[in-house]
Length: 269
Image (cartoon, rainbow, N blue to C red; front, side, top):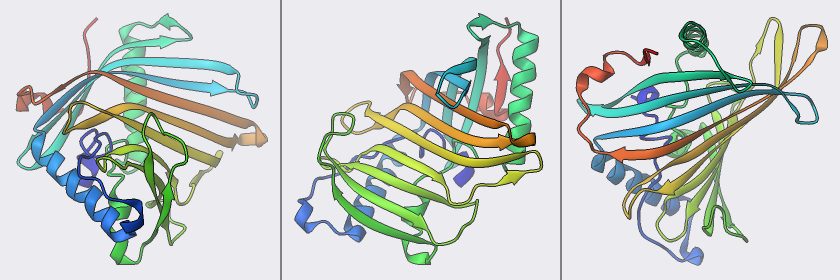
């Protein structure tokens, strides 16, 4: 179930009640966030988003040397108490020029191969796992106080989760939690260990997801950001970044189960 929760877990914020900072402890803050998360999961049966995903190559000064844009729709539904996801790719643009369907299909197939090499772990990964594993000895979780300035318009509590092992299956997270409702406003995260391939050495990989309120009870993703740096063969520096924005959300619309028989589709053009 951990690997099929996008958008419902990594992409949802959480709703709860406020507490004074002087009474806040790591345990009480974690309990409030996870309890609110569960109430929200119980309230959501399905979700739909329009999404635009950018992949960019840059030079070391940050100038874009190549840009790919994918337009797609993202669907999520709870079936037999498990959340399933379907992504429909609609269009591909390379450096601003729309490509044909054959090129889009080839890029989508490549993405599926990359996902398989990662062991199926992608944006559906549950970012609250470090909080859930507080008492397993795998993570150190610390309370970092309140932000001095607003984060995306909110004063936040800060929780830091650090993996105790240098392991690429674990992540380090900095959580920004809305003080008025225990909603996740933003999460900064990165792998606890960077893996290297034969012809590529990953030096840096930092990710952030931002949330916004859908209504008084549910928060949803606003956008996702990624920045990375590595070295390819012959010590060529590689800099890359990506971002995904989520718009036109629809919650509990009654999506058909048949949509989730496949994880990926490409719209006919």
